[in-house]
Image 1: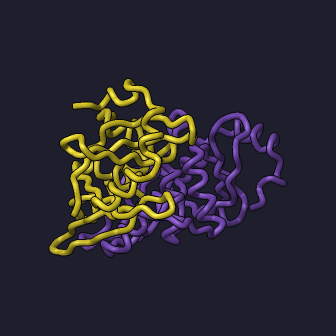
Image 2: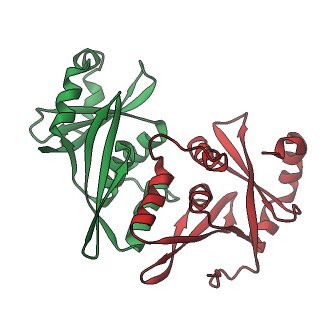
Image 3: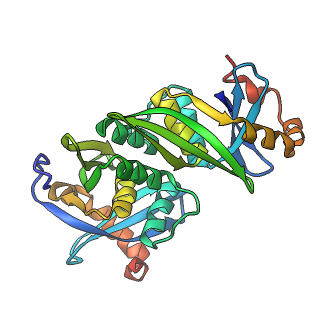
Length: 151
Length: 157
């Protein structure tokens, strides 16, 4: 089973010194934080804010290559969590063929936001994440960290 | 597969000679040289892009696909060939590049920052070119001062 997720926020985790993308399901029941690098966080932030960089950033280029190839991003799915590493797949449609390509969730999310494609997470991943120190981590977050992208 | 539509004179093939961290800023400098080592073109890039270029240069494979690995992976799956990267223009110290793709519909080009173009070209094993016009405009005085500061010993890979 997979659940559709929306990017609800992007925050900085001072404990790991990295950025965290917060994915939540539509009913705000499930949550999946994904730790990403600085440049991926910036790529996601640009898309969330609807800002266009003066020069195409890496994920804009990624999208442009897909456009020229006549391929459409159907969806991205966070598929697995192993040893604190998340795995994702990007699903493409080109002509009549479908492709499923291995990606880091950060790239998959940055691309999905640019392609207006839905983001899903496997329920196993959400369950697994929930069991790992999530509660403790959440206690360290301030409410205003979440505010920005709440709809 | 020549870049006929780049009308800025003859194209010069470059190879990536090395990537150096810029001590003063959070950036890297990619050193491009022509085959006869007559020309040097340093391009300042972000730390992430610099690392992406460095990894490809050193033949390092990340356990997870990095952003440019993913672009190459898309191209491979979709049967698109990345044929060349061309640094086409420099305006107010900003470099512009184009990536040439061979798709089912023929040759297409996409606008790119040189850093992405180089990182992708190294992964796709395709040549990197610069227009003569860009080499002419790259700003002689700055370059001389810069080369003096780094010294040629740093230019080795």
